[in-house]
Image (cartoon, rainbow, N blue to C red; front, top):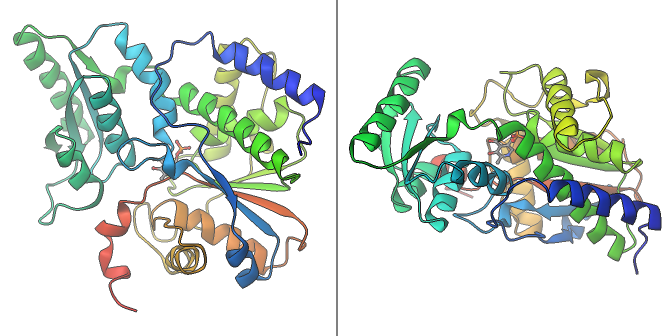
Length: 343
Ligand SMILES: Cc1ncc(COP(=O)(O)O)c(C=O)c1O
């Protein structure tokens, strides 16, 4: 059974045709699965819950960045690079997926992480090493920038071509496009089971959210988009609207998103970015115990904490359909193993 209208289908075809004009390489295993989570819903006594498995995008333990790397690395390939150089945070999911995707494309990588080499190599960093990246550590952002440029000079001195991914202009727009596509997948998959979502939850501080907000507008959809940030670094509504508008322009669409259309919850960050908190940890445990689904305590757990909180406050009816988009980040459970090591 499918409940997508002819009009929606035509709009999907139009948006897909526009996206098809942007250079791309195939990396992610899409469409990612989508399934219902009945045990979780039963435990919460709340609405029907579906989970979109973007933790299963297929490269180096998956996650949301694999989708946008299809566009970012296609852009990088125009320079015909031998070595991709990227500067990110110490326990970055983005770094892990970038290295994995570069491996698939036959590109070497130099990874400059901001932070000190930890005593214990765990989580994303462990996977970065496993993937064979040349991993270096920078004390702060300034030093990281210098090290990126030095690495590029070093590569050139070997007669090879470097590409500094941090200077690649595609990150924001590619993420938004990726999550317009993800929304289309979700709506198609939900239609096959006759479900219409009332609310979408996703961990985002703007880039992915821009895609969901654009999708809502483009498809004239009735669902609400509730994203949950894992950091207080940005003013997320303004950032989301700005990325959405740049993305719309890139796709040749005449529409404007304003910051007051953007719903993003900052209240679940807790103490700070990267620091697990009680509500997020409870959410991780609950998903694991009810559905065998592994979230992470840095991003998706905090987003799930928001969803659970809203359900417990009675914001949904039993027959409502809520969609939780799992953006990955799973290696962080090993970095924070002290949280789960005992019953
Ligand atoms: C697991 C996970 N979820 C969500 C996000 C947020 O993505 P964005 O703010 O780009 O939408 C990230 C970003 O690093 C992430 O690693």
